[in-house]
Image (cartoon, rainbow, N blue to C red):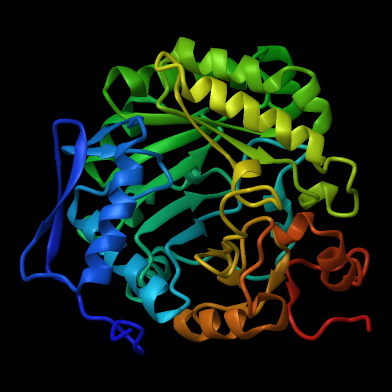
Length: 405
């Protein structure tokens, strides 16, 4: 195919939304294979129910750039380059803009990085990191912590994300979703926020997060942001025990009650304090239950949208492991890692450019090829790359040749 070249031009097209469907509007005529790919992709999106709208475009997930927007058009251009050239281009960058957090969650993957000896990056370095992230091709920026709302200049960092090139969301524990942030952050470019809720029962949630009164504040913040029309989701996680205890159904019911746009369920991953334990791993039978639940709730328009990691990055999922394929994680000290669950690093920004770090990471043995399932849930990957990390080591650990044969 002519389009399977070393690169592709920026094709002349836009996406409109009319009468409940996404429509492709061509400028100059597109090559047939490009047009067919776009029409197929937009048709699949149109068959789904939007979780909400952002500045005139439907939103199908907070993880996705709104397709009927200029940033959405750029996202499709990058998608075409990945598809027709085989280039490894990040779609999503997760940026841990601080380490500070008032919670002590038993499952927090960010604890990998809290022992780092690197100083947190200042605002000017973060602005340069964001600029380089956009140049790499990312069209979705996710701000993490720590607790990102503890960073007073967060709005300044948000404002450095060009809204015509990418959209920004954040993950928060919800304690500081107050009126001031609710007014300021959307004006500074925030598309939406996920609020982490580990239980629908306040006392249990507060215990799991080590923060009395957190649940009530988080729920109040969700209600406040939704009353202003902001896009808000709930983030939770599933293990065999939590699935059996009804966490999926209870969280969906709470999401409906609060009127959130989306509920995202991560797989429980051996990460952070759980790094050496695999008891939390979902089994194939658990994933079948999750699949049935997702299909059932998606068929009910009175419930929020759902994104479930199990349906994407598992052996039975419909996607692949995003780490070092379409996503990277930059720690608070500038450590470049495959994802926020993986305590391995290829180097540090700004000592090296993000492009150099990205190229090194995607050329490293475990990431040279795309993996079907989440590597941190793969026992063989863990045996080779995680188990040899010395006990008590400062994380993230340098990613190089495996320490075992």
